Amino acid sequence: MIGVKICGVRDVSTMQFCGGLQVDWVGFVFYQASPRYVTPEQAKILNDSAPSRSLGGPERVGLFVKADDEAIEQTLQSVKLDVLQIYDTEERAKAIRERFGLPTWLARGVASSSDLPSRSELDGYVIEAPHQEGDGRPGGLGRTFDWTLTKSWSAPAFWMLAGGLNPSNVGNALQASGAPAVDVSSGVEDSPGHKSHDLIKKFVEKARFGG
Image (cartoon, rainbow, N blue to C red; front, side):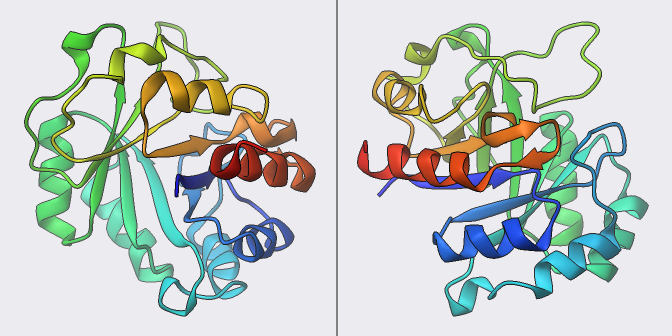
């Protein structure tokens, strides 16, 4: 079954709704420039509102943008995370993985097949549109890329497709890309940072069942 990640969860009702849909991952954004930002303390409240992964709940993914070790450490002191999703260099992501001992994914902007990694010491990649000069933040921008670039890619680690996905296009995106999992944020929102339960449900159904 296709894996589904709902990123940028900010409220208890959405957290519990995702748990009820058996979403595989929920993402907490620890980046203050994002409209989806949550503090570590807020993330703990969200964490505590839904079952843990061991009890059938979603894995908790913490999204960090060029964060130093101290910031990540302080976050982990407040909230238990299952995965770290990093916006930085490959070397920095590897150092974070070694330092904290948690599964670590790197967000990777892809403009051509040469941007796809052939070797990896990381646990996964979030493959999305390349970042552009002037972007106020990474991710959550609703921007797509050529999904066919990944179709014949021999991925060296687990990966998921992200960037501009929504209930209307996720079926085509999966068919074109061959992705084993998908990551959505703005595509299931009524406005930046405000998730729509109806859109989340439609997205999950389209991703998993094509319905």
